[in-house]
Length: 307
Image 1 (cartoon, helix red, strand yellow):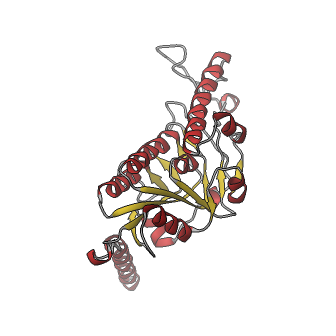
Image 2 (image 1 turned 45 degrees about the vertical axis):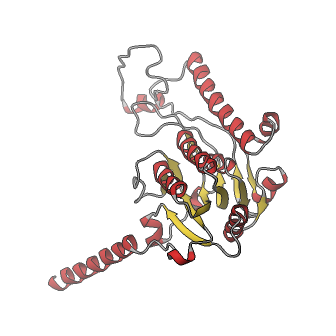
Image 3 (image 1 turned 60 degrees about the horizontal axis):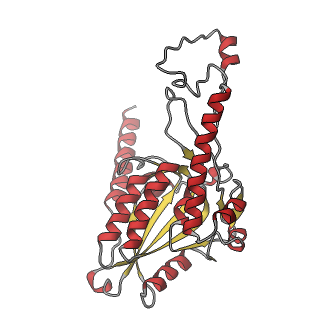
C-alpha cells in the first residue's frame, strides 16, 4: 500500500511538473535583432466560441472571446507586428462572441495591420462570421466552412413530466416571461417572437458577410441557407479568397504587410492546456449544423449560439 502511495505521489509530481513546463515555457517571440523587418502574429481559435473572461476557457475545448480580444489588442499596440493570421478550427459559437472578436479585428485593421483568416478542419457559422471581417481568407480544399444561417431549438417535455408525475406552477410578471419553458408548448405569438429574433440575427450575419466579402446582400442570401461548403466550393462562390494551408496564409499576410522573405512568426495565444497536453481536436463537432440556441432563462446555458 505504501509503495502505491509513493508511486502515485511521484506520478502526481511528474504530471504537475509537466503542466508547469507547458505554462511557463517561453512564448517563442523572436529576439530584437530578428524583429526589425516586421512580424506576423498568429492567434488560434478552436472549439466553441463564447463570451468569457481572459483565461476562462483554459481548461475547456472552447475559446473565450475576451482571450482573443486581448491578443488582438496586443497586436494592435505592437509597432513591429505588421500582420496577424487568425487560425480557425471551430464549428461556431455565440453570435455576440463572434461580433466582439470581429469588432477587435476591425480595430486592428484600422491601425494599419493586415489580417488573414486561415481555415483548418472547420470554420463554420460563427467562425465564418469572424473570417468574413478579415482582409483575406485562406482555406484548405477540404475545409468545412459556410453554414451561414440560424436555427433555434427548444424542448417540449410536457409529456415526459406527465409520465413521471412532475408538475410546475409558474408565477410571472408578464405573458412572455416564461417563453421557451419546457413544461408547455409555445403559443403562436411566442413562435412569432422567436422567429423575429432568428430573422434579426440572420440579417446581421448576412449584412456582415456582404460587407466583408464586398458582395450584394441578395447575393449572400442566395448562399446563406445554412448549408456547409468545402473550401473548394467556397472559393468558387467567393466566400474565400484562395486555397492553401496555414503556411500559405502566413506568407500571404507577410506579402500584404510588405514583409520581405520568410517572416518572423509570433504565437499570440490564447493557449489551451488540454490541447497542449493531449492534442485535443474538434473532429467530433465537424458536422454539427449551424444552431442558434436560446435556452429557457431558468436553464443552465448561455445566450445565442451559432454552432
